[in-house]
Image (cartoon, rainbow, N blue to C red):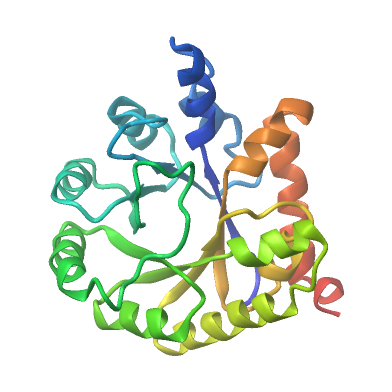
Length: 250
């Protein structure tokens, strides 16, 4: 994979801000509509079991009121598969979910969850929905994703981004991402990446040639408080594009 990396905007935390007070604002659907034509290629929303941010109505409106591909993040449960089949988003990204967590804490253990995941993946693919698995940059998990017939792996970038943010050596974590991306592409899986990405960490990740898409949410929504969402997205888009240019790879 070479050329432009797609950017998926996760609007979960627009809904978090709305739900902190209640009511209708800020509206995650409006956030998605604002960035149409501004460097965003798709929208991601995580419908959690406890509906702590995105609601069923948000998801429905994102699906039908925003002319961008919708990536539905979800746990691998009967409830969520039923909702996804009815909603038919462009893609579903299966993630581990712990009700007590503040955010997704790590990748899905696809190797251990093979028997649970296979029927859910089959149902989603049968409905014409592309299936992504959020995994650690680990060859065992990448190979397991291929065995369960996922279309995509989304590599968890949290450890690399945390190291960059802390100013500690991050070469080992970057190498893990590079190796996992190469292995996934060799197996015929599309490669995405996400979690914790900010302006300081995005260039190294976007420069990995096999990566086709980055999904970024919390940082862009947080930065939008200070500069506006279009501006925060625009700067991220510019950094991603530079990372794939000849100058960015030099």
